[in-house]
Image (cartoon, rainbow, N blue to C red; front, side, top):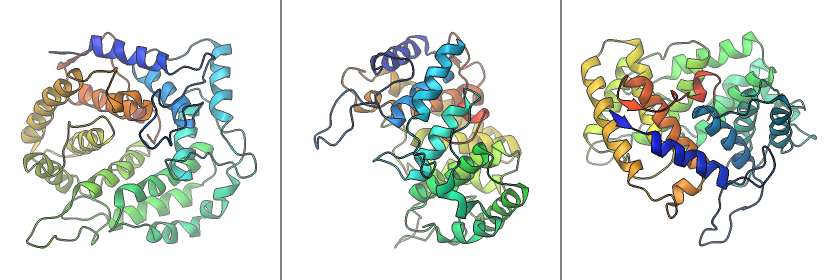
Length: 334
């Protein structure tokens, strides 16, 4: 069994080290980068991901007064004029969805209506919005908007059944039968053969967790399993090489697709178990004092999400004092 107990204690210590001294107030980074462009003060991703991490490792704030401080701290980043949350490193739809998703852990909603997204909350806006995304050139980044819009509006209670039905119907029609990725026709062949598949898989992860939350099936889970196995077997992306979200993208896609079908079930299981060994070994070899990914609470959150999904996908393989809880099993968006 892979023992994660010391690493999870390190995670708890890393979260504490990013605290600015009051409940819910956290920075995203402790150390400046070479460009000097990091915001080392109180940050939306610092506050939201401190909450996300503490929830995942079973150390979530419990007292009512403390929880109120956290809600106020995260909510303070909302712009009352349009209801959106903003931060320099992500699109405002991503930041809005991410902060609202963190508030949901406290059973809270944003204080202000998302008026800045009102035009996109109309059911007849669903298809034009999805059509407008860059599915071919930048599907990973575009998914922050495409999946984030659903998460933000759904969690804020600002869309109806017609909006959701049209959203998931479009995604069902547009899922690629060959790769299991969104969007069909967007995964272009490379000169000499092969496809730059991983950005499409990473984008697909975001739409998949929306489907999982809404209890809607992935349209082509067999193809998605094939793609995930191809990525791993052919080394199409450097997984287990840096702290971030790429690993949970792959793990979540193959694990959740495996739940829907018996297609290559044994192969998918072996791949997950082997990757668990590799990924845990990678993380345990890092130095928290010097690793840039561990210094970033947002990237650290991605890594701990990967561990939570691996623990669920590989029963009896990863030991922790308390079972890790993936936030995506409660609400959409990370």
